[in-house]
Length: 148
Length: 148
DNA sequence: TTGACAAATAGTTTTAAATCCTATTTAGTA
DNA sequence: TACTAAATAGGATTTAAAACTATTTGTCAA
Ligand SMILES: [Mn+2]
Ligand SMILES: [Mn+2]
Ligand SMILES: [Zn+2]
Ligand SMILES: [Zn+2]
Image 1 (cartoon, chains in turn orange, purple, blue, brown):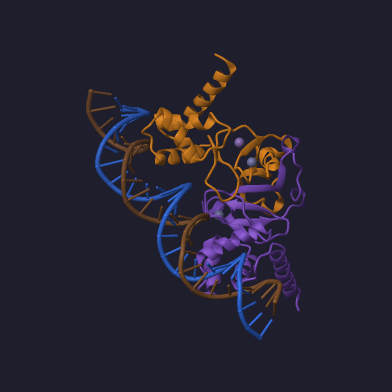
Image 2 (cartoon, protein in one colour):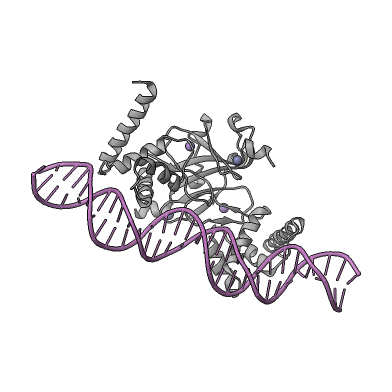
């Protein structure tokens, strides 16, 4: 088995484990949505995932995709990308990384800068339960900077 | 004139200037929306602002409130708070600060930690046009942490 | 001060994202 | 293999935001 396949397999096993731990059934729909999400670095919307999964599973419903994506977030197998105002964008890449979002074309680009992996929680909000700490950039991507 | 009044007045003068610079008319609706926004630290939705402004200006339309808020963002007199999927939350506080959002009650809390005001752009995205740099926390606020 | 006109608004309709509803199917288990 | 709670499909509903259009209004130049 190749490294890539091994990595893929580990993710599926991990997903299986998370579902069991949470008392969730392993349905084909769940697996399909999970695979679609971890198979891309494009930070898709629910509609994007729906379109993708339907190629293999034409009868899946949009509601199931939406529900499943929320479930993935709940069990820690995915998260919602930070950003402002638009439809939710999901991310199945659970390795430490940060995001840049292009305000013109909507592209969300991963990058990794280690000092931002675990930034300090300032005293001012120290008494809150902090579940997620994010460093996030917005602007125009290369293509959008240069055209126009 | 008190310090508070002076500060308030400066913001209106600044707003006036920004409108002129952008070639925008000074309408009573615009002023009312702007005042409503800078008069709160609650990060209101468009509906919130609508409700508020209508007390003084009962005939203003929701569309005007939405349009005006977007206009304020365009001319740099306000911005949209980070966070997707829910209704947009607006912020008229243009002093440097950061946000914590409670995932349970939706409250958005301002805090200010100077080292986060102007963080480094990593080399990986150095060629992009970075317009906004954000440090952002999510979790449960005090009340929501304790009442479970 | 007035008149012309582009910009902005009110009121409404339309679109789009997400959630809700319910009859039916299914994964886990004993 | 049969049972049951959980999950799904398909459709309806809700909600935020944008689009549309007739009317009104700031702005500016005469
Ligand atoms: Mn990512
Ligand atoms: Mn704020
Ligand atoms: Zn772009
Ligand atoms: Zn809270």
